Length: 481
Image (cartoon, rainbow, N blue to C red; front, side, top):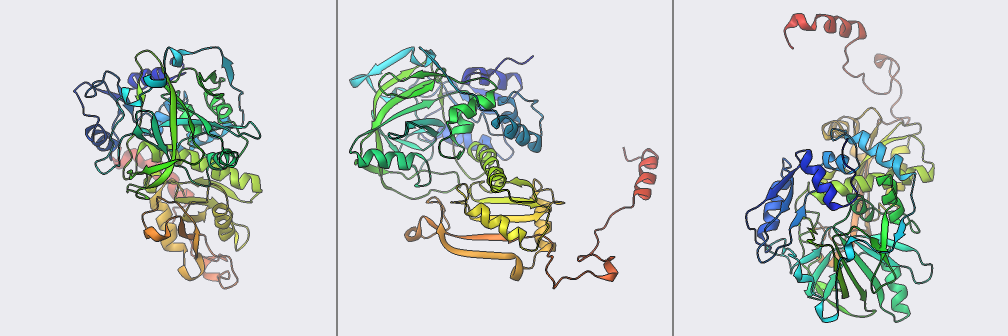
């Protein structure tokens, strides 16, 4: 029986047991080289997760790629490594319906080593300079940022990129649609710094939930417990009233001043492009660092899809899309996906069992008006006989069931991602949106036809059951294997 995965180290062990890990023993430079190796291994085709054991100038290893494939996500969830996409998604959603409250423990391995004041230096770890055109070194690429609402006490856990300005000062980027934004606004209104705890190197379910857009009020640690099937053990910070996973490899504690910014960026993002340039962003002043003995730095390289971030985002986004339709009671949705191949934050495919003419358009409008749809650009709606996980079938539906004049709906100047490279810099944050209704039309101008047996569209080329049975019986006789 496979060993339980309860932290980053046990996850690495399981990956190695399943042949999903490569240990890079040659010395690798943290500046550019490490990121270039990771991007090449990300493929296509995807290679193994990487543990860089010897990073130039450092003794601390760096781990990337742990959730880059469906197989590795299945391993992280304790499933059969060969679980397919559809089964993985169904199990993921099933578990999220059973949240488990975290358990507060007195201490944990993440506090085996402690540094305060002048001892604080995030560059004691081999923080990569991931890309040649990045504005600096980024310690925050695969981590959890913990904050608390000053009015309600609700704890939020999210992932926002973090650039190193100084040994004790980090830049942080987040959008107005992310929960950290209104929290920070409340602290600014009170002219108080916002406490922050940053957890790096955790059980992989922590990243699964921190990268997911759960509704306001949901404690992501309860969702991580659901995915693990066991409550997350949390330990209180040394200098902040916040909790982090007790088995984190590294924890950074600090605060965000209410009105201090510094130029941040550029950074190669999940779109495969550099986004948003250089602009003033809030900072986090680090007051304390704790870490395990012999820590492992967790991070990831971003590039043209599919990267690890795209794959994890695929799972997070489709989970939230299904929740949008479920919460609204929208009829007929039989499946959703947001292909990692094209950046799942920007496009979705929805399958419906159509019962009224405008159902495809309504499905698209509902999704684009939701939180998960705020930065999404394109929604493709198809009939339920189309395998939405097969992009060839989706393209076939578009080419054979769509007339652009009736099935493509475009709106302009809607809310969009600041990282969208298709917009001129002057229009960053705005985007055009498109719904492609590639379902068969059921409007009156497509009446039933006698030559099609009373159907409103041509019959599909199919083999009769009798002929299929004949072929199956004679298959060995054909010598086709």
